[in-house]
Structures are given as C-alpha cells and as structure tokens.
Image (cartoon, rainbow, N blue to C red; front, side, top):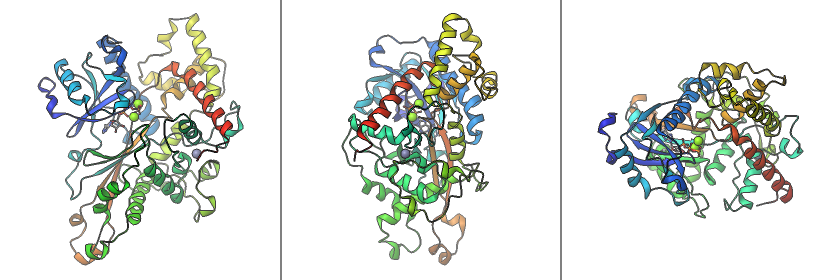
Length: 464
Ligand code: ATP
Ligand code: MG
Ligand code: ZN
Ligand code: MG
C-alpha cells in the first residue's frame, strides 16, 4: 500500500461497530476511529493522541491478547498515517452506505490515523478455488456462569449473562425477538449443543453473526429493524458449497440439509486447531457439567453422546480460558475499581507507573501475569484485576471463521469417487476486536449488570 498514492475510489465500505468504521480494498482493511457526531466540528483528541490510541490497540493485541489467546488467531496490524484529503473523500464516499442507526457517530477525518489489517473476508488472501471463501463472523459473548463469592444474586449462577441480557433488550425495544442462542451451548464442546447454538445464531443474528462471501456481506441483521432475515437468500448462496456429487440426483437437497451441512462445517472449524491440523488434544472434560444455562431452550434429554470437551488448541477453548481469568465478576471488581480510583486521586503521578493508559508492553503483561490469586490489599492487585476484565473483552471479542472449499480437482480426479464424497473444507480462524477497554467503564458495567438482573427477576424470564 503506497500511502502517498491512496485513492478513495479503490476502497469500499466494509462495516462498522460502535468504535470504528472499516473500509476494504482487496486483501486489506483500514479501521478508522469514530467520534460522537456532536464532536465532529472539533476533534476530541489531537493527532498524537489518536495515533497513541491506535498504537495502544496494536500493542495490546500483540503483547497481551496474543499471549492469552494464542498468536495463531491474532492479527495485530499496524498504525498508518493517511493523507487527510484521502480520508475526507473517503468519509463522503462511504456516508450513504452507513446504516442510519450508526450515524450518531462520525468517522474521524482529522487525525489521518488508521489501523491497517489483513482483510479476513477477502478471497485475495488465498489461492483461487471454484467457490469464493465464506467467512463467518461470530461474537460469542461470555461462555461461563460466574462462581465468584461476590455474586449477590443467585440467578446469575444459573442463567447466563447473554440470556438475561436478551430479556432486557427485548423489554427495552432494542430487538423485537429474543435470540435463542446461548453462549454456554456454543462453548460446551458438545456437537449437538453447538449445532443448536449456531442454528439460533442464524435464525436471529442480531449483532452476533455476519456472513461474508468472497468479501461481501451476504447475511447480517439491522438493529431495531423488524425485517425477517432472508434465510432463503442465504440458503441460495450456500447451496453450491454443499451440493456435491451427482447434481441431478441431489438437486432437491432440502434447505434443511444445506443448513445442517453448513452448521456442521462451522462446528468442525470451531473445534479444530484453527490454523490447520485437527487439534484433538482433549483437556476440558468437566467443562460441560459446569455450565448449563437454565434459560437455554436446548433440551438436555436430547444429548445422545457425552461431550468430548473442547480441544485445548481450539479457538473456543482459548477464548473461554481467557474469559475465565475474570474470576471476580463485575460485583467483585467494583470495589477494586474504587481502590484504584482512590489511589489515583491521592497520587495522580502513579497513573504512569501503573500503566493506566499504556503502553501495553511486556512489562504490562508481566504485571497482569504476576497478579496474586488472593487479594493482598495492594493497588497492584486491584489494577491487574480491573485491567484483565476491561481488557479481556469478554463481552465483545469476535471470531472470524473463514471456510474454503477444497477444490475438487486437487483432491482426486476420479469422477466416481468424487460423486460419493462430501465436499471438503479447510478453515482458518481469527479473533478480532481486541481493543483495551477504558478503565472507567467499570461503574457503567456494574449498573448495566444490576439493571439486567433486576429486569430478569421482575419478568421472571417470562418473555417469549
Ligand atoms: P464493536 O462495536 O463490536 O466493538 P468495533 O467498532 O470495535 O466493533 P470492529 O468490530 O473491529 O469495530 O469492526 C467492525 C466490523 O468490520 C466487524 O464487525 C467486521 O465485520 C469488520 N472487520 C473488522 N476488522 C476486519 C478485518 N481485519 N477483516 C475483515 N473485516 C473486518
Ligand atoms: Mg466489533
Ligand atoms: Zn444462556
Ligand atoms: Mg470493539
């Protein structure tokens, strides 16, 4: 990428979240910061601050998260300085493609700073196959029930956070229908439960699922909208990948069968080592008993085979392990947050020594790792715990699963054999969206937790 020859016509709108807007061009994406629209006249931070913010994201991802989650899943990218004229033209160009409900924030056109990453949905990254690669983006959310002694409401140890949050969101009108996806089913390692979880993600994707084909988003959902997702059109896209063998005999392959095969491929990808190889190292046998959410509509009696557990090199295992570093729950963390806050008020200069605003280097990681298991009353303990929670992005982390159909002719050239053989796929799994969360988000997280729990207790979990 030649930074002095950037042309906005090359780049297209790719998507956005709450914090950043993403544009793509072939094998790359640029992730630009967003600001509240009120600030659009006056940039809320200087160019140096914007650069530092993005550098912090890169450092956090490459030094902290990649050591927790496994390097093979992480692409940290690099900070780039773009010509301001390019950024301004780009912002005008993408504006009309942005969903209206995201427009309360505007793209940063002042700093020229952006994060450059490999485009994980792009076919250009790989050898051409007959069919463009599929890329499935899943925001799995927290996959375990808290067992912290600080949890004040019993319900939190029975019903998972996602399922309770669904009731809250439907009650508040954010979504029309509740999703029957439960993260504990996805993280269970039991193929039936995983299948069930993914099927419900597809039926009600909200912002937990997007599907790309050849770099183009073909399935997602719109916040607050009532549109029934077009499952028919998704199936139309998927059919060519699964219709194997003698096309004439299989031409009536039912939609249900296509969907089942697709989900099967995702289950395999999530249980695989993610970067080639078949994984298979089993270490999490107790996992399933530990975590059944009472709100999940999966019928336990349907389980025909016990769980094999999550293979220790799978993306789900690594994600769950990282999430579980948060042993205290938000209720146990809040007093630690107050301890740090008080300390910083008394000794403002300590902010730097405690690396409250980065840099997220090896010394920072070491502090997290050296954190004692029991509270020794120190501010260091409090900082490490709070930063682990804020940083491990347990609520937001997002997985990208790329699925490539292995070209039939590179497998075998015998027609007979081919026609009886199911299509083969290879996968590559990555983890995205690993930004360090601001330290001061803790009080907000606590308030939201309280609201969600009391809403659930009030409605008795009795929404449709
Ligand atoms: P959130 O509100 O979830 O925190 P965010 O503002 O931090 O989101 P991202 O999730 O990083 O933004 O990016 C927004 C979207 O852009 C993603 O959901 C994904 O679809 C797409 N995207 C981000 N990074 C990449 C990448 N490297 N390759 C392909 N697509 C990407
Ligand atoms: Mg995101
Ligand atoms: Zn649940
Ligand atoms: Mg994010």
